[in-house]
Image (cartoon, rainbow, N blue to C red):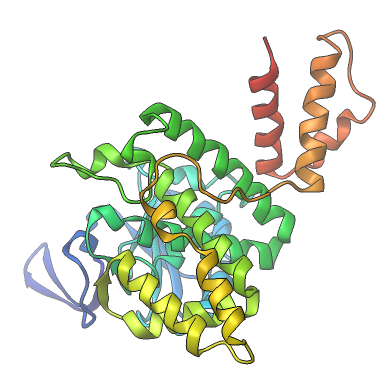
Length: 347
């Protein structure tokens, strides 16, 4: 359960009663229970995994670095308040990549691929312990506060571990997925904005990559205004100000403006005004379509992958580029860039 187990007792032959406690208040949508033939294995002082016994070795091997990931997110975002962090890898029928139930993250078995290339899903759900669980959106029009922040944290951590190019390639692919979703909605549809107007619709109708990727890009832009070190301080300040509450973008904006005006040393009044004036909250939040500021996520590795795909296309299927073998050294997202380029440029 998404709570701490406090005991198991036998009430009658063949039956056990388990009790759980979660002393930290959570939104009702984060309550979860898993029942089945399940096994737990510790992977460190405060991390572990649960899955079916037949899958345990594969799962444990794939997620053996969970403790390091949790340490990295905590170093960036501040104290992890929940105690133990456990991922349960579910059967293939689970319909999502992951769900961030506190103390018991649900994950699809599709993240267990043998080369740890999908562990970023675990990092994403782990980051939700701060943005989504510790601070939650007040309503689904502000859902980006859960997902955009979490993608931002996930990519910061992946960049620290795997390098800046790795993080930017993920953002490049995310930007492509976001634009495809925007086109499906319509570039002038409110669902392609960060604040979708639901008008009584099921919130799931507006669900897409927009809240993840446009939200990430908003935070990426804020970071460009104050620098990486100050952005880390802002995130810690944001967490301290809104811990265990549900908020809207209005409160985020107020927190941002207070931080810029009062918490960044050695800024002149003119510099403060320039930073505040550079952020057009109304357009970022309510205008449909692409963000008002276009970020550049190009990298040498991504450019090389695109160029290799275009070289294959130029040969028209009658040859192989001289440097074809670099493909075999690509990590999974670079291979996706290669195949996306092939698909989008082939007749």
